[in-house]
Image 1 (tube, helix red, strand yellow):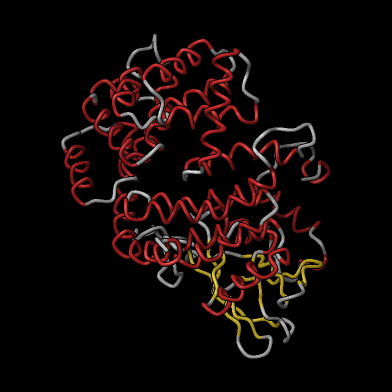
Image 2 (image 1 turned 90 degrees about the horizontal axis):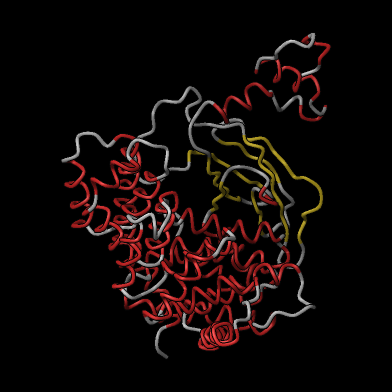
Length: 467
């Protein structure tokens, strides 16, 4: 807000919006009222998902609705959960992308129509991931997008390739009209992906599906084959050993790629990590910074008690916080139940784990696997008085931990146990919200497993099962 209009006094929000309206680009003025635009985004909860359909010729229809997680009831909104959405889009054929410039229409009502070139085979909404909304499409348009990814993925920008998989994996959790296997089919193009930025971002999105299915033993081997087929050519291209010639991107993401491969049983990656650790032990030479987290996490998973104690010793002596966090995460990744329980008990002893690190350690253990998460829940449940007295009345983030731990359950018996336990607690203090959101997430996970597990798991077994 200009000092001339306010005379150097304080400015109110309405004045800011009025000033922005005055200075808005001329071409936006007929479509955009800053006050209405900002209010639609700041005075109601959540964000929208836009559905795109394409009719005959170049006719496109877009409709908006609130992105909803589960069957929760939303409180009333003064805007009826409708937003003023700048809908950026790109179009093209199987060989050419019309990405130049900013194609934009404003979605200010529940729906609207507009025209694209009649020879357009595909349309991609929220191009370059500019807007804060998700996009879904009719089944035929999703099929075209998946076909492009496999045939000529560079027609889409790096941001768009990430966004496509991210939208598919997210929408596949909450919408019946988005088949969860579309995300799996789309992501199998990644074996040809040269951008490690796109690859690692997409792997993170895929975890929404994978971590649910991986609790079932029958799907583990097909899932491993899926990832190894994807990652093998990429590892062959970037190599495992750091080099002075490595690009910044390779140095930044190599460890994440190798860690993902090792997690799915890539023998050479596992052996490479073990060799690096043994060299460090025998010769007291440091592990390369871009391999540090990868090496320690891989070694710790199946570490003997002696090796695990050595890693804990390094953690205790380490003064650099970033390395200490990597070592903490490695300790938490062990598959040895005895060592998991030992680490959990360390969180109640400040001489072992600092109190401010308790939540992080418990979170790392919880995230290391479904059975490890059950150990965390049992530990917190059995020591509830300690954790409630220590964290129940502070802004410690312990509510976030409870939400994450409880939210990983999906069996009715587990959810019933959690609900019964907290029903007997009259005052949860600052932890109440975490418990409530965790139970909501657990119920949604259970519903998803019942509705989609067979479909997604069947895709893996059909495509990556025993030949």
